Length: 262
Length: 323
Image (tube, rainbow over all chains, first blue to last red; front, side):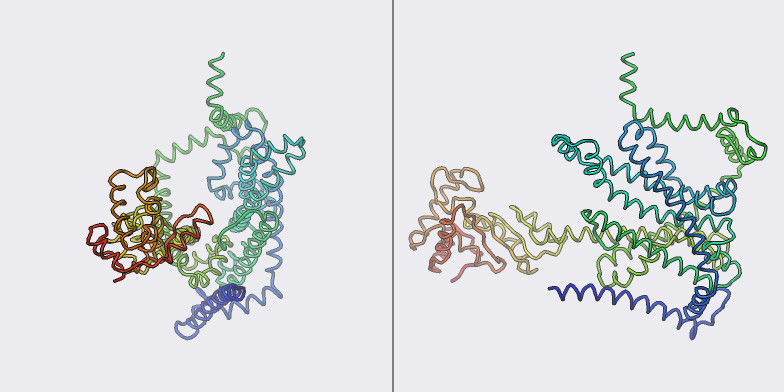
């Protein structure tokens, strides 16, 4: 039975890798032997690999990634620091929940990226504006998930702690926090995706460095291999972050059963 | 005063929520009047009223409608394409583990990456016209559609699998209806194929035989009466047996006894003779009853017994029996 399970997992990996390889090989072959490659509009994996190597070893791509990461980290950290307490307050104090819920819902539902030009006008081009954009996009998942987590805390558990003589501290650390944590981590994964959008939008609109800027600059100058190299680098970073968050979810909230593989 | 309090407590949520938004808008409106602003800053500042004025102006001068129209077309076309591609692909990946394994790396990668990074590429390929936007809407919407369809298909499957593992009913009509929609390994049918009732013979059991669905027959004694015989207070289908049934069981008992067979033995062994029946599960309340069931199961029954039951009109002629 164990070998069978192992084989099934192995097979999944094997199928996945070979399909990625197949797509890359087909892409390369088609543009080498079937269609003549117009380097202004398209490129192929071998050229991207060369550009990737050059950019990663000698190029400015790492610098761009570092600049973007910095803005992302600032914005995301503030989203955590603001979102969780605000969400907790909304969950604990009914009045606060009633007051803030409609307002934040409206903001969460509207595409805040549309505010990018305004934010750049107000805060200028650079780290600060990008951080603000990341913050504005990623704070709401933290607010709403903390809110939902606190509210969905099992009344019965609270009563149990109370009737066994537990104090406020026990209530917060033994009941409310553990039951809210899975919500927060799940929110963090949503916030991650939105934060990345914030970075890219900010750098597309107006920037002088950063990975988003690199992508749009390479596009504007028809340097397709470099552009794809930058896209791939961002893809790797995004997948690493998302999968890392998933791992964190299973470590911090192992009691939460996540179904499916995605 | 009391009435006002009631009014408030009934609508607290909407009053607080709406009031807060209204308060923010009023504060925003009053801000330039309350705080002195430098010339430079007021250049970048506006108030809600000015926004409303400008919206009205744009609308009256017909400047906004055209943009709205173009954006709507881009949005709807991209979304439509995403539905056309995402839904079938989600169903396919949900149904086939192999295709799922092959598509999964791409879905994971593209779903984690903000699809917006492809905008410069799409502008390069499709120009700044409507198509680059349709494609970006498409690639933005197709992955959530695909993933949710996939999850939906997978979850439905899990439920179905559980149902297939153990599906039972007291009415063969329900089971027959289910067999039309799903692919089942076996059915549990209670009380509908016994010495007292063979309605399942008409279409249900032949269908199960044809589709190789195993039938587990429950309630071979029809909840008691075929085990105890026609005695007052015995139950038929979990209710006190009506006189007509008691009569019939009495006749059955007589015919069976003529062959030296207890009624319960005939009742327990009868369903096994149908080729679609995979098992018979008589209920037992005690270890003694389990042993009694085993004895009844081994009790020899002369094949002529079945023929007699059929000629007496107690058993349907088309019920499969030995001899």
